[in-house]
Length: 137
Image (tube, rainbow, N blue to C red; front, top):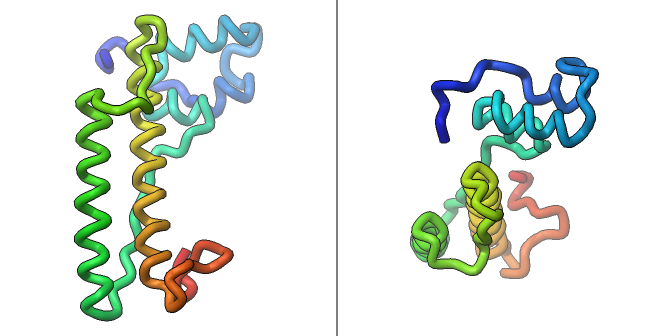
């Protein structure tokens, strides 16, 4: 992505028609593609820009589970970046949308890893209904 030619415009303001209120939907989308930074473009599309993994560690078994899950996560992310996965589809030559799709898929992989760690750490091994482990969401 070429960050040098983009100006700093709020993606939320553009999405909510505060900035450029006269543009229709397709014009606003084209304006967003041409002018927004990567982070603001994700905000414009209602995509969160950060994800995290909560790692519960209470005993030695949790550490071993963490090692397995993180290795699998790294392997999946590496396959995603190198294009060796069925999750990435070409968006008719639009590189920016391809990169956005990869970011979304990477976020889903990371959320799945966090859920897997919490599930393995739960006393029953089946996880909790609210997706938490000992009050940690």
